Length: 275
Image (cartoon, rainbow, N blue to C red; front, side):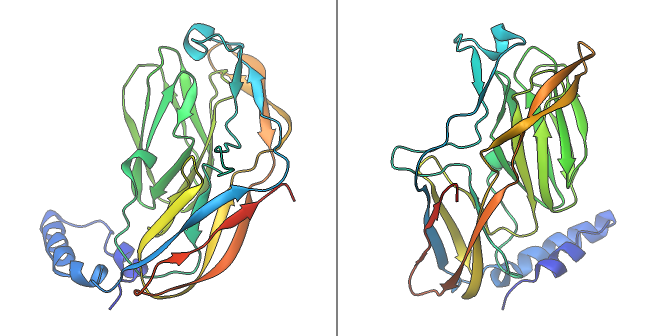
């Protein structure tokens, strides 16, 4: 018997202290049916690049070089396309598109915490469960902001080092993150997700989805896009000056069918290119 995500979220409505205790007890009582032992389906694979590699996207570091450029590289990588030595594409989100039941909605902690370090957002790709909190901090002794557009619309300043701020992400969907502190190269993407069958490819382009209920699904590989399409005016809140911030092409996605059963792992490989 599976667990319906819609039913699960229904129980997240505001509760009294007594009801919260009862809800937790009920959760553990039903844990065996949230993740039945026979749900051992696994989907793994790779996302790899095919064809000529686009040129690296970078911009000049023109603010706070002592913090943003300690190695004196003079430019900052925009981190839009990261390829491994064998063509693996890092930072691709792979997920199941048509699933309504399964394991509890838990995702890696490191994808739910954002740091601002040497004027980069780390990690570059975030995954946050719907109705869960994103925690944020800055390791840099300069003013950064986290300006969000999309499924969340916050504009949060970080004037103090290592002070953690949290915000709950209530709406599923894509969120663009940019800095309004004049560090125009800072960019990241966050996906607020309604179920746990999401993964981010590692530096080799590998991914794995575990405890998938048997069935046939559509599996999607989503990439934020790697083409610089121009620049837009942005406002540096510290200097009160207008700056030019890079803008990028729309995200790209690729989709395949996959059948999952408990007897053997399923393997899906994606080959992506500029076409």
